[in-house]
Image (cartoon, rainbow, N blue to C red; front, side, top):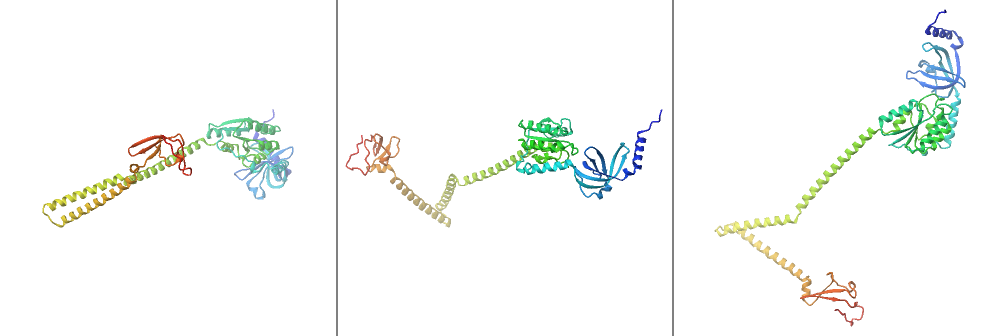
Length: 432
């Protein structure tokens, strides 16, 4: 039986074979960049491919000084370096030392061409963007039913607002039939009267995300009457769907954050508004109560009864003083105080005479205006049945009843004829 080798021995042997091959140590490979990722360590991991094959590649941070451009999906580049075996995993990859840009790859060229065409048609114009509702209750999702995207959306939705309803259309998001499946999902959910749609998937290479670069998907999003949030790949991934959608989210998780309002934050804001309104009302009520008290004090200060009471009190005090001084005079105290008392009595008597005279004048004026006095002089006072005064012939008509009040009684009569002043004055007014 032949000897068995360990995995480590086999990988080491293959690595040594690659190291001894002069062609693999200094090689230039031309291809299209795909699945490019800039690591936090400074290394760049990407895939180099052509129409039939692909090879994993890496450029370590130490060689990035010679890289004069930002590597992106779809770029056509030439990579100079070596092909070596990564012994731990038993796979070979291209270790890049120098990368030069040759042009655009086929997929990226198709992407730019379609983007320019749709932009010229106005499908990216801001005036066609529909606003995303702030308080969405029903949210449709077009994505794979088993992917990480739907799980992230469900978890974030449950955390932010458990009362929101999610409607999933399980679409294909990769492969030849993906564009048709995504388009169908958008059309079906658009007819359900939902508040907003999330269309997207998790990250991947430009080939994995290509379904969202298809014209049929872009037109479905543009014609959708429901607001659409595009959530395709990672933050650095950009698709045609992102340009057409009403809003772009960098990831499916971010799309859920944008579509689902935070119910706990909503409750906090509502409570804050309630407390603010309550305090504002309390301050206004306190201000109105203070003003009411001030008006009440003013009303009491200008109350006529108060003035009468104060006048009566002053008059009473003057009478007491007068009586006291009068007693002093009667007892024989002819002093200056007694003389003052006599002057005060004289002033009071004069004021009383003036007031009595004014009162008589007012009474005479009132009596002169009294209708009873005029009636007593031979005149009468005419009213209708409701005791409304009649002072013009236009207030009555023939057949109306009237009442004539004279000095010693009243009479009732009926109008038989109306004669204005401009008619024959010899006609008689017959009152029965």
